[in-house]
Length: 175
Length: 322
Image (cartoon, chains in turn cyan, purple):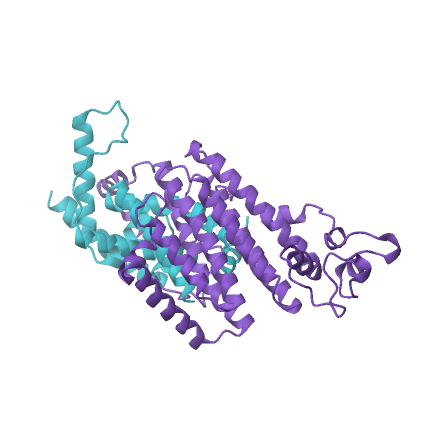
């Protein structure tokens, strides 16, 4: 398996093997990230497709990432998710993929709760939302988030503090 | 607020979002195929500029060519808009014949061998991309796509053989690169999602490998490549004696590849030019052309602690913004 740096170098030359490897490596994570925030598998798949399309166009114009590919891709995906939400705010949808043992009521309750959390997330600033999503949904550490947001670790901690306080107010205090 | 100060109730709510719907494998595959097809398409423009450098094509000439193609195609087919709209057509679409005719028109109007080769390869690659698009729709690619792609590649090789010998190797390298890219794209499609498409894809990949073998032969022996193709087309080779190309090898001058390839002249007495120009195949051409598909790298998809593998670096975080 090639290193990220080697992958990026070869991707810059439009080597389809390297590009396929990049897609295989990152598209599942990007899909999951988008699906969690959008709550819609089709929209998540569209987000992944557009993220990789923009990546290709950036490579062609010579403005692609030189390193930190994962951070670059998640940043691109997050921007698309925000754009999507602006156009079409999150809506409650039934998830067909839940286990059959769950009752309709349980499914509806979960969807409702998920939708409520998403709505709260999208009331945060873009940076706050990205910090919360990467930290508590994707499990990234502060250093990795700092790379994705192009900010120092201290700023990430500050964003996280304010984001959690705001979420607590929106989801717990007002409940 | 530190990480461990997260309110347990808030943590529980955030955890609920972690149950993302499972990704549809077919949708994921379609996305990958689309991504790779777009990559191939975008790489064409980059390669095209490379061709221009190699053969010193002038921008003015290229623009004149484009304008000529648009004007004449417009006159021929009733409007530039129709021709333009046809460019995305698939064999199942009504506009597809117009697309093919416009491709032919582009070739008719082309007087430069290097640009003609580029066009031919681009058109062959378009057939491959059409196969990918059809496969994505679950439609079996028609045999005509393979046939037309093969014709274009064959024509490209024929034109390459008319170039000066010093340019042939570079041109063959470009052709090889394009064929390998097409082969890789097709290999990505062979994932079992369209079982009925497999024979057509297999046949096309076999064709590409065969063409790659010819290219590899040419790279190993450019002079022999020129000789063979000109011989096949009845084009006199640039020999001082102006001997017919069907003459015995003894009539071939020193630039004839047989002398350069074979260890000693004594080992290859009285062989035909065809045989002497064709190095023994050792499978390298096939190996180069058959890169196979990349494997899934990370099935579980869990993110690492760092976005990249080089977390220590900090000087180029802004290498590119999406």
